[in-house]
Image 1 (cartoon, rainbow, N blue to C red):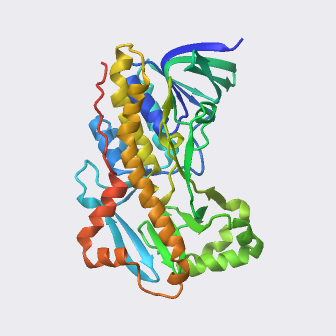
Image 2 (cartoon, rainbow, N blue to C red; image 1 turned 135 degrees about the horizontal axis):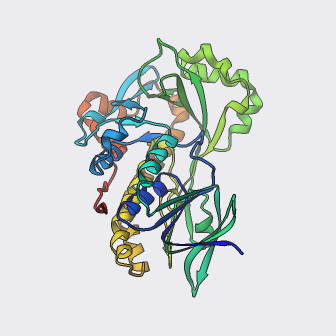
Image 3 (cartoon, rainbow, N blue to C red; image 1 turned 180 degrees about the vertical axis):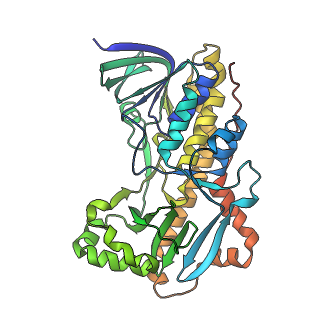
Length: 407
């Protein structure tokens, strides 16, 4: 027989949405169990941007001083180089928040920080190496989940189950929730190259005659994202590594002397880009948030921001009925979707517009030297750089902590 746990809230997935929600609910005295299928948070290809809105949340929680002790890089401006012309695209310094910068912090450090503070509350329980496999239903309502753990199978029963298990969510599939996908014309090649003393200092993007590469300054190395046409990776591999070296060197000439660090295709990871959303984020007893509710493109690095904001909104809405031991009705879950649908749709539509614009103009960019009109406007009127800074750094309808701490 499987082991059994009973709790108020069971969260499937220990990513930013799951850990943030678990921490916020445990902080109020609500019993929470978080299940994470891996043995730790160390993952090589997770997003690692900490947005100004997240720094602001840490300030509201009284944790900013501790959070700032976690090693990170800080980005005050986002710059692009379009066919050799530099443009400051976003200026975060004018944002009215506690820390107006974009932070680059390994996601495992962020999640470990949340774990450390969540475990100060006796109502929080994190189970690692716990892979969620199915839902438990009673009278058409989901009342728990089943999972395989290192100590054997386990059933976790809860007043509410929250799926934060990513774009490949097991729970949303088991619950039969309908996914609406948007066509995405790009994939991303993800790799590292060493950073040298005379390299540019800032994180930036390079647009070179229709080719796009994003470089994230991680002090000792560049985390590189190279955009390609969706499904085109096999053709790139077929041309061979020397041809790939040449292409990258043309886009970012200062990296040409270290292409040998990419010894084989094993050093390059293909990130398949998807944009989708659930028609309905919930069913009786189950709520999906973060990537489980809406997969985001990596453009703008806003996926973590939306996941964290989802978690804050969910905690704000679920706190009262959970604390009073009320039934979590679908009307309550609808409030979460109503609150978070608008910002999600706005950001996804912006991402789709940018992606389609980038890929449809690639052939034109090879012939025309001028940056696109939005870039030219921002360069001509620097004040406009505050708009993309707000969209990336704060987002639409930012959330604030409304849940109390139980002393």
